[in-house]
Amino acid sequence: MLFQKNGVYTSRKEKKFMSNQLIIIFVRNPELGHVKTRLAKAIGDEAALETYKILSKHTAKITAKSTADKIVFYSQYVEDNDPWTLLECKKKKQVEGDLGDKMSAAFEQAFNLGYKQVVIVGSDVYSLKTEHITTAFAQLSKKDVVIGPAEDGGYYLLGLNFMIPELFKHKKWGSSTILENSLKDLKKFNISLLEPLNDIDHFEDLKKEPQLLKQLNIYG
Picture 1 (tube, rainbow, N blue to C red):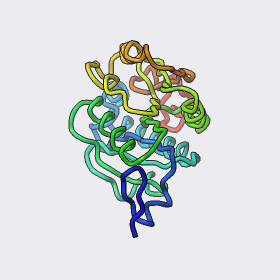
Picture 2 (tube, rainbow, N blue to C red; picture 1 turned 90 degrees about the horizontal axis):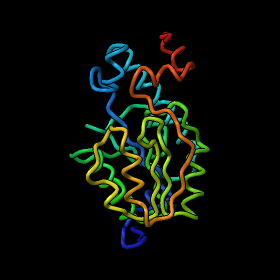
Picture 3 (cartoon, one colour; picture 1 turned 60 degrees about the vertical axis):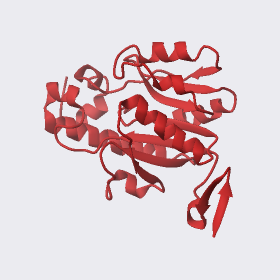
Picture 4 (cartoon, rainbow, N blue to C red; picture 1 turned 90 degrees about the vertical axis):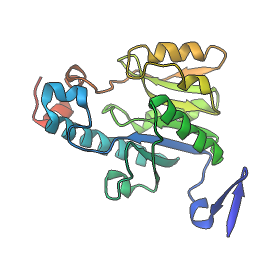
């Protein structure tokens, strides 16, 4: 039997996972030489891969504690057996294009499924806590947009109640101007900013996380 929600039909099995809140998690397939490439210049490909695996497991643990539904979007192909397999979540492949195209398509899918509050996070922040996600959803009950600023000028979390297409266009993704330019696009909206966190892309970022360094046996 199919059930209808906002024009979208789901099966009985799928329906039990439907709530008004969704977490979108963007991940990369953990392949040597293809993750944390900027960090790898300082610590090597193998250590960079291990770093990413630890970060991915951390993000899975943090998001698992949230009661919101979850969809994991993979960069290249859907993994069958990874840290996300233990979560009650759907798995999809990211669309082609730049990061803006990928995020825009993911949000569009989420709202088309009938979700009212949608939060997207990456898998690069070791200091991310479940409380950040809980706070983001709470703020979406009052504001149009929630942003978790990254210390490098980007953001580690973006929460929306509806699509804002201009947020995902004409951006130099990966640069230090992302947050600044995004805020310019959001002048007519009510915004909530979370506390800034450390997004790990370079060795200097990694050095700010001593517990992570210990796991890697790297001391900066």
